[in-house]
Length: 362
Image 1 (cartoon, one colour):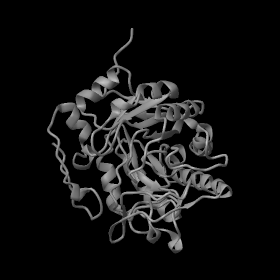
Image 2 (cartoon, helix red, strand yellow):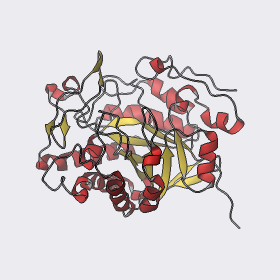
Image 3 (cartoon, rainbow, N blue to C red):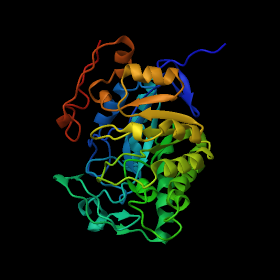
């Protein structure tokens, strides 16, 4: 006799136990110091949301070179580890589980954020569109330089070091951010990767770095505590053109990642700005090719999430913006309580206001 999976029932995602099938999606809030060290406000922020089955932290820089936005946290110094350890302790004391999202922005950066005013790095020296968030407001990303082949091993080592630091900080696992047109996805797409070495050209070469990073991180954590995030048809950040064959490219990558027996694949299903467009890509085919745990993300409400879990089309569903103004989102979804709405001016930067001062429904 089988039972239908329930959105609010406990489960596992890889080796990580979860109290329900609701994940808190990564949400950049730009509340850390310019040194990437979180303040005690982050302890309150994540503790308040610990009823999520799994918290996936805001994207966290693996190195100074990997930073592309002001006031975002890091995981490459002892001070970063200490600050994050206070967060994980608070979440665990509240009964939650939390993984750290590992981030290198690649070309979506600005010289003012780089050590010594250096140019951002990328697979190819192609200018990004859009804006990035610098210390005094918004600015166009700076022109990047193309990485030398010999430099790539050092970036993989940066991911490995960040994974070790995440373990020291007490996380339950890590998520490799290979989405939203940051460095790893810049390698994946033929629109941003014009290389001719072993990291460019064929789909196998362009997806190589994501696979190598996942392997390196799994050496530290064990594969069943490592997830990977993908966004096959998202053009933000950087107003980035799509790959010429999204289904073929990301399907090949999903199969390669599936061979690593990772904890999960986390997919941004459609666009994050403007019309969703998820119907233009077969995300369920991607899930089947990966063959493991799957976290669906982007545009889900309670009913769609419950139906997706019940029909076996995902193991968890991630909610992003609703968690900003609803720290008790799981309770509200379960009871049908109304959801608060956060104004956009509360999303990035500032202090406690719009960050930790949202009341619970009770």
